[in-house]
Length: 341
Image 1 (cartoon, one colour):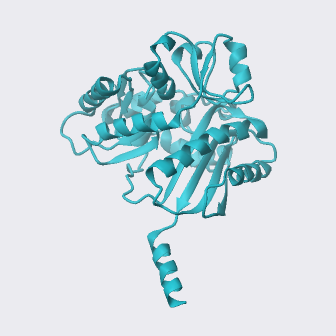
Image 2: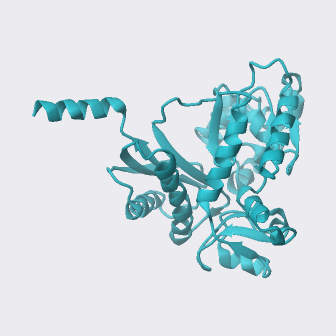
Image 3: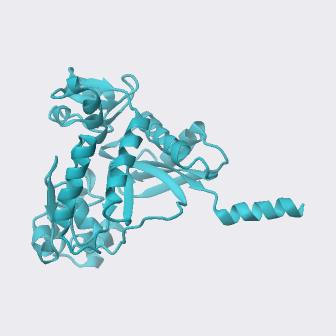
């Protein structure tokens, strides 16, 4: 979806159209959840502190987050997806992978129809990417935003990737871009000049992924879980967050979204674990988790602090929060033990 939260707010309040709008914030110490395209021309973006966004755009209109509304619209869009396939892998409220390989119709035609139905039934615009795998579809989905689509056919993969900037690949932010530049790597074509072992020597475990992505290799299936084992949400920051206070502010919005999703859509599922995931600017990852039977905002903050300490002050590029559900076999075992007692 195109600027999903902001687009919904503009739809609900047409007087906002054409003005710089951002959703989120909780005072000047808060962060933006999203910004519309007008605000982005001033440099405003998601995860940016409110005070900085107001410095860039003093006329910025801040709208409080309304997750209940966004979830309702997301469910409406998800139902449209279901008319075309049941192989749906949601990434967030505003993004999902669809496997439509069972159709004889072209992916481009299917995407046009889905986008048309979304616009007709919700008044919102969506952009789409089509490709032979998730990696290429994801890259293509950003190619003609907003309100556009782009298809990468199998025969076009090598040419499409040859001049593609490495910044379009997962895991390549500002720091990694600078590191790659030192080796003369600026495009996927440049990456393909080096052996896998060399890339692993330079970039650690990410080297293997860069080698595969530069060749358009991605074997991951579209996974639509029948019974969810977990529920989570994460945000990749446009610029890495360098302070714990900045992360705390961002965590609040993410945690609230996960909590509301659980309470609204999965209230019958018991929580077994709460976790916080962090990816640092050097792409090292860490996850802190605790067993708990209830949602605990304070515990989320404690887990974030634990992850932060592990990073020894390293900036953070991705932050996620989630819960793991008690599996049915655990419930059965507990009932058996109680009965036995």
